[in-house]
Length: 109
Length: 116
Image (cartoon, rainbow over all chains, first blue to last red; front, side):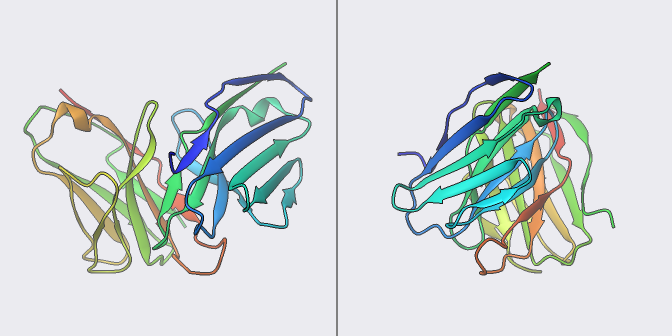
């Protein structure tokens, strides 16, 4: 099982749609979880951390299920500007992170 | 406050040539990292440093060396470049705290390297 697995997509959705990304991780000892966003030919940027209780930031909601080793990201009311690749990221110890390969999202008018 | 900067932005090398990539951060972060990103492979950690004067190997360290002589700088060297090292190289820095959720990493804009 790969350390962090994501559906590669792409996900093609119309503006205003709700879209969900899923991610699984293999290291049950991982303590920190994140979603990063990467625009085409740009550097990854932190979108949000993910907590066991679930957390929300505007139109974005992240959930963590430790028992299933599963992380999700929900985007509501998609905007054209949400088009990007979304990276699932898990702490692997010693403050190093493991990145998933990313899920590409394309939002169309 | 520039964050994380990388030099150069682009470079073309011939096989066997050497070069050094420079990463600088002005956020007083203890931890710094070098990654490479290839199509279909995602980001892979090459080397990292937990403080001035320290370095450690990541997932794909072969063919690369690093140095952290100053806290704000982290250098990545290729002694004898190979076509397999054609990639986009990202530097990142972070506080490296053990507090859950705070070990965020901040990335530089990347260096696009082509080895012919």
